[in-house]
Image (cartoon, rainbow over all chains, first blue to last red; front, top):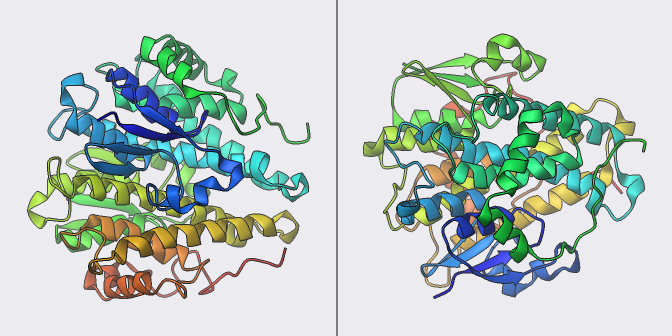
Length: 219
Length: 221
């Protein structure tokens, strides 16, 4: 059976779309829209009980949370070599990446709420968006450091740690000037050249929520 | 010896609770929840200046979810993980990661109610939206615990696990901002967890922690 990916174009579910493409799997895509209320419908909540994307129907299971899906896919499809199983010398940096990508992701989600999803822009707090952009930059600094000596998140080469980070490190550029992190910029460009990344972008679809290239306080 | 870098009432509490459940020797290195977490000394342990981090066998690890996975794999005989291949593995992973989805909302609310010190900088609409999102998370837990066939005592069919610790501690933090009044199965589950000696051992001591009230209601919009 073809797996079904519950997806919003330009959102976190891109992580899973890209990983699946790296594994040579093209899912059936069920597209959802954040702002039309459909993600609160019983039809969606029975797949993803907190109403979040991504959710993936695969192997007779419905799995949600991008980190959980990524770990599951790597463990059940080890032939692609994209995970680092228990006992692997890179097991720990792999697990840290699975979770730290979401620490960065949540900061972006908080900024998305303030900048994109508040109905009334006057409700936005300049203080909060300034603090959060600064915290986001602080979480990027260690990644920029890692990428000074290697081409991928893990020293041994491309892995699902990259598919977890890929979307996040690009999205961070909406709120933090990435020029201050040249290794991250070069990494983003490198990842975008991968055939599976190109294929995933084609499947991603047109973004269905508003967005600007960069958000600056007072601009 | 394992050293846990800990601030009471933060995410490091879930690692403290897990270590207590595992019954392995460890020591706690307490930190204030302030800018000292950005000092060079601490950044060498946790590169983003966050708690928790742990030191174990000469290595340092960070990220609460990663640390919980590492500890469950290191001490498999305690049965708190569900290792690759276990039938409950997918659900264990889902709930472990979901704990962090819950906590991002509590973190935003902690910033709004506690960390920001000038009222004019607070945002009542963000308080309201984030508290509503916590309730959506409770609804997901409630659904999980009240399956049509039989109610579950714990998140996994196979019984208590580190998934309950991660989500249980996330609910501990969330309860400062959203009550469990409309979620009876979740309330019972939480009460069951909070009776565990290891949970009690992970609670803050007198005058410790970042919350000075039991509940922070959203402001009127």
